[in-house]
Image (cartoon, rainbow, N blue to C red; front, side, top):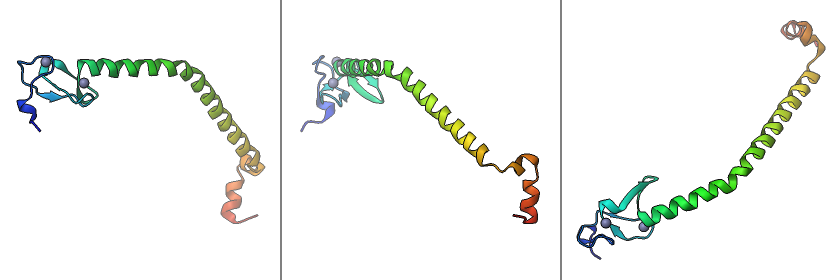
Length: 108
Ligand SMILES: [Zn+2]
Ligand SMILES: [Zn+2]
């Protein structure tokens, strides 16, 4: 196996390769690689990476609005349901301010 230093750029045979694309495993010179997501990708793989990432986002974008709406409604409903439940279960003494006294005095 030859070392990276002795390899040449796939697109520029006269230039020394400084990086190997993690996607296609080919060697490239500094000019041919671009950093993307913390990795050095060649132009072809960068295009492929950005092209596959964007349509995926667009495909799910229309789902985001109704999803957030439904999630918000469910969260609000659950919160109000629990609030109502808590209020229903609260003894009437609690509203009058005598519950704390009873608890402290040990009365039923
Ligand atoms: Zn590549
Ligand atoms: Zn090159």
